[in-house]
Structures are given as C-alpha cells and as structure tokens.
Length: 178
Image 1: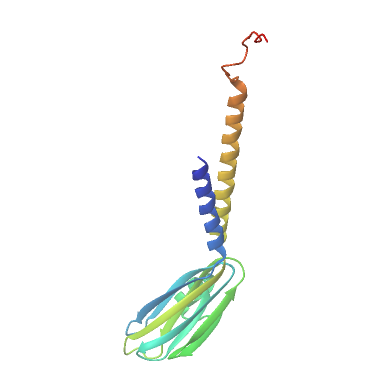
Image 2 (image 1 turned 90 degrees about the horizontal axis):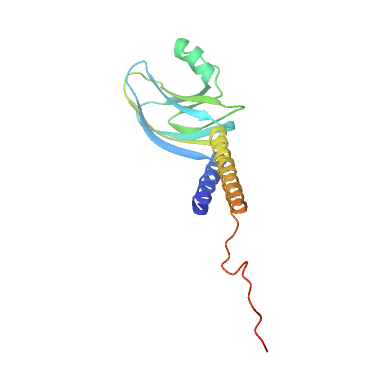
C-alpha cells in the first residue's frame, strides 16, 4: 500500500514539474502548389510564449504568421486578412509571440510564389504553465494523500475496536520461593 502511494505521489509530482517545463518539436512541412498555406496549432499555456525557427529547404520565400485562435478562425481563414501576434518573411528566420491567458495559437506558413511546392523545416518551442497538467498533478497528489489518510484512520479504528490478545496477560502466577 505504501509503495503504491509513493508511486502515485511521484506521478503527480512529475505532472506538476512537466506543467512548467518548456517543450519543443520539429517537423518538415510542405506547402502545396497553388493558393494554399500550411498551419500548425499549439496550445498557448498560461502566460505562454511560442517561438521557433524555420528554414526553406526548397521553393520560394515564406511568410510565417502567428495568430491567436479568434484571429485565425474568424478572420484569416475566412478573408485571408490578419492582425498578427508575430510575422516574419524569408528563406530562414525565427519567430516569437506571447499571449496572456490560455488559448490556441496558429502558426501559418504562406509561400510567396504559388507555382511550386515549398518544403520547410520548422522547430517550435512552447513555454509557460500548462494549467491542465498542473491541475491534474495537484489533484493526483491530493487524492493520494487523502486516500492514505483515510486508510490509516480506518486501520487505527480497527485496532482500537479489537483488543490485543496477549498470551501472558491475565494469568496469575505464583512467585517462586526463595
């Protein structure tokens, strides 16, 4: 029982630690020929920041635009217009954007010339506090502590309810004569 509780608290602790550590990922993307763009979605963590680098492997210059959820879904995807959190153009470069609160961020890759496929290598880093992981980790630890407390309390009540049976208690013995 005790080992299970220790493992459970350790798992909760790892979730809490992972909630505040930055994460990164890399991908190779292809923007199709024609009037297309490629987008990636990430969850902006509480007081989070998304940053990254890009390198065009083949094709034309690209524009990288970072948009919040409302800007992407309500404006950009309908009209192609935007008010960006970050924008950068070229064959390679870096981008960065911060967002207060929690929400989704969209990283959009557009190519300048629509007549060819553009291949791009991208690395994205997200930092901030993951409210979901933090909450689950804390709840995991709290539930384990509560369970252990209740388990120990039940054991204590059980030991009070049952008197101890000692083999030598209650016997009358004669004193040895000297």
